[in-house]
Image 1 (cartoon, rainbow, N blue to C red):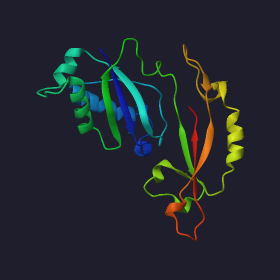
Image 2: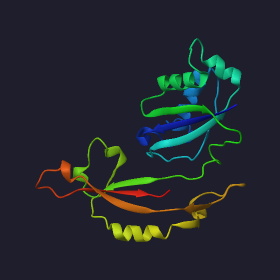
Image 3: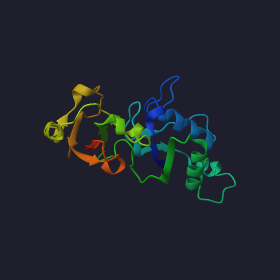
Length: 210
């Protein structure tokens, strides 16, 4: 049976998604936890899209193939359904910066990588670094100069449409380097309500490109 795993992570202390020798990665951490929870020596997962060092994810999706008997045995004496028991056990093993939101049986033909039909990326930039909220500092890039949002949006508009990103990746047999960008735009969010009256208004530019 194929199992779908929905997860989220704070990428600050991970060296990206993909397993690398002697480095702490999301894939390595997740697979180690799965091996422990399922009482297997080794587990391999397939992910919707790899992330780089320091990149966070709220809705990452992965899958693994598993024998039903192995899943049932992993539940032990739990009275919960095996998939829910696996989710609870995983979150008990995983560190706090990696959480599993759901473990479900995938429908026929599902593939975490090739069944994905869209992705959304958000980039948050604060052009007043001294006023960055310390509680969200790991999710915001502090930029010491004013941002020209109109110019940024104009440049980003050129990305919308079907584009070939071969220059940014290695070609792989059976894979395409073409991506359709449906939108690419930025917006400014003010945090004036949290600043002293004499301070300039800080802003955070959120860039999204599904």
